[in-house]
Each structure stands twice: as structure tokens, then as C-alpha cells.
Amino acid sequence: MITQQDVMEVLKTVKDPELGRSLVDLGMIRTVEVEGDKVKVVVALTIAGCPMKKRIVEDVRNAVKTLGVREVEVELTTMTPEEKEKIFGPKAKQVKEKKALKDVRHIIAVASGKGGVGKTTVAVNLAVALSKKGYKVGILDADIYGPNVHILMGLEGEKPFSRDQKLIPVERWGIKVMSFGFLAPEGQPIIWRGPLIHRALSDLAEVVDWGVLDFLVIDLPPGTGDAPLTVAQEFPLRGVVVVTTPQRLSIADVSRSINMFNELGTRIIGIVENMAYLKAGDQEIPVFGEGGGEKLAHELRVPFLGKIPLDPEISKSGDIGKPAALNPETPVGKIYAEIADKVVDKALEYEKLGSCGLKRV
Image 1 (cartoon, rainbow, N blue to C red):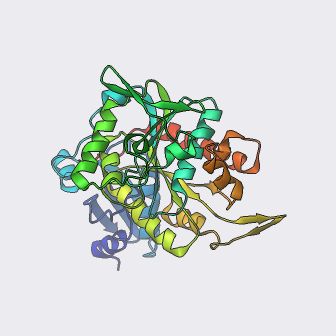
Image 2 (image 1 turned 120 degrees about the vertical axis):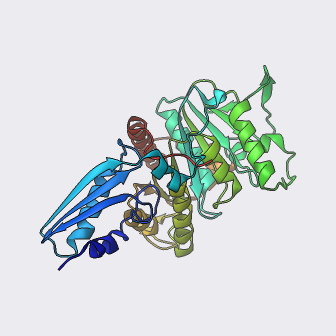
């Protein structure tokens, strides 16, 4: 005979899609009732309008059905403030509104689990693809240790200017650009510890005059260190685009990066697989493996945004400061345009849903 303990054991395998932790460990399983081959589970959500509630109900129902029960009823309720504190801590709250960002509709971060996967190239071309669709776009290079956005945008030697104690971004290709590469002498390393990184990024959230934007794309440094953490805390992100290559090592690092954003309550817009294949005539050669990013997206139940080929033209266009997405009629330009469409769709969806959880500070 099935017991409440049996049900709780299988529910330990069910994770909150955004927090990445077991519903049982989070204290979200309010009650379990067993009557013969019928089971009723009451789940307490962090917020009543949680956009992931349908998926949570489905996952709970599927897990309990593995016990061989005939009927599973899942009832949803909402956590009390005290219960939320146990998850997020007493200081959990929404990201403080930044006046400089008040007219920015969607802030999209572009992240990666490791370096060398072409994250900055993806961020720049995503910004360009969004701009080509008629959106007002800005891009912030938050990769303090290796700022390259200004190079890919053809802005070497340019500097922002100040007005009314605000930094005015440099513009190129119809996009407003701010990069730490503007602020440090060429070739000089930036050697900062965590507190300085936090302060610098926090200041950028306040002092850059972006004006009215539909999208602000933020190019994060790779990994799960101080800078990605600060951006997730200081900027009201609509979501994160995660870039990977097909290799196993890159995929493993991406999983850690996604788990970090899940822990912070930041939604994942989707995964982009870069350097996915080399085009040789009609043949696609998987130089670095095949389908790793798409498989990971399926496993983690996050959207897969698309595959970008290993194309010499992408590198060449970056070297001369003319991103490949400037021409939406080329094969690569079309791919970035399709990815931009998916990002827009997700951003609008998340805008309607609001926040399911709380931001940690």
C-alpha cells in the first residue's frame, strides 16, 4: 500500500523550474493525502501567478503516477511571507529600480559557462539583429576583464562623453554602446577584486543615460563570478540568453551557469549553440561535436534558440567592426534574425507573466 512517505520520496525528484531545487527541500509541498489508489498533493507556490505553475503541476502528477496510482490531484496555493523567507532569506526583494534604466523596456543578459564560446560575438549580433527589426537597442559590455564589444562594433578609439553628470553612450549601426573598453587604456589590464567589480557595475546601472530603449543587451563575462552575480542583482533582467558550443566541457559549464541564474530567480530565455557546424558545400561538418546545446536545452526544459555555424565570415566581420547580422539576407544574418525573433517572443511572454520569484540581494 502506498504511503505519504512514498509520495514524498518521489516528489524529492521534482524541482522548481526557476529555482532548480526540489519542491520538498523548498518546503513547497504543503500536504499529501492518500486514499487507496488516489493521491492529492497541495503545492504552495512562491507567487499565485507563477508562470511555471502548469509545468509544476505536470511534473508533480507524473512523478506520483510512477507509484502506480490511478488518480493524482494537484492543488495549488501560495506561500506565506514567512515561508518565502525560509527560501530567499529576510532580505529578499525585487531589484531596486534604477532611474537610468526606467525607460528601458527589456534588459537581456548574454552569458556563458566558460570563455572561448563566442559569447560576445553572439551578444553583438543579437543586438544588431534586434536593431535591424526596428527596435531601439543598446548594448552594455559588462565583461570587465576582457571588454571587446567596442572592437566588434568598430568603435576602437571612441569615447563616451558626459552630460548632466551622466555618461552618454557611443552610437554605431543605430545602437547605443557602452563598454569598459572605452574607459581603460588600450592593452592595460583591469585588475579588480570583487567589491570593485560590484561597485563599477552598480555605478553603470545608475550613470549611463540610455534614454528610451526597447532592448538593452548586456554582455556578461564568462562563468559564475562577481560580475554575472552583480548584474543579476543590480539590473532588472527580463532574462538571460546562454551561449555554448557543442563540446561536453562547455555543456557542463553551461549547466552551472543556468543553475546560478535559477538560484537568483532570473529566467532563462534560451540556449544558443555557437560554432555548431562548418558548412562545406551542402554538408554540415560537426567540428566540435553535435547537438550538445539542443540536448541540454531539452534536458533542462529551457528554449533552444538556434545553431550558429563556424563561419570565417563571422570572425572577419567582427575584425572589421561590421557585425554579420547587419546583412539579414545572408545565411548567418538570417540565423541571427530568427534567434532575435525568439528572444523578442520570450521577452514579451515574460513581460506579461511578471516575476514568479524574488530577487536575492
